[in-house]
Image 1 (cartoon, rainbow, N blue to C red):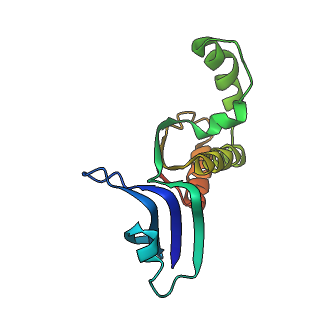
Image 2: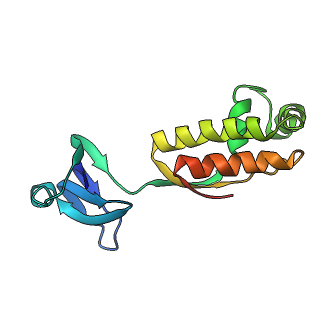
Length: 150
């Protein structure tokens, strides 16, 4: 089992419970208990402890609008408005977006989201010149362990 400790554990339950010096006990893919660290530390079977006195433990953030493949286009077209950027950068580059390129963009996007605390996201992959591009995104998202609506 994994014990995730935090100076604060924000539960986001209906009562707005906040545990100071709290912890979350995780068994496999499931949260087994949430409460005070001093109480949860007594559980037998804990194999790993992460976090500590300077950490906030909270549910994952949700990214409700994303285009994973566009991580590849970051920095291109800076200073342009959305319409101009889409017409001059996104659409032309996306004609060459295949399975491998889409997977690379999705991999970078998933890594950045996970590092920032995002756990589920919605991805609008609307460039379908190569139908394999969508499969590259989907396979990469599954491998990342994040949850997504594609």
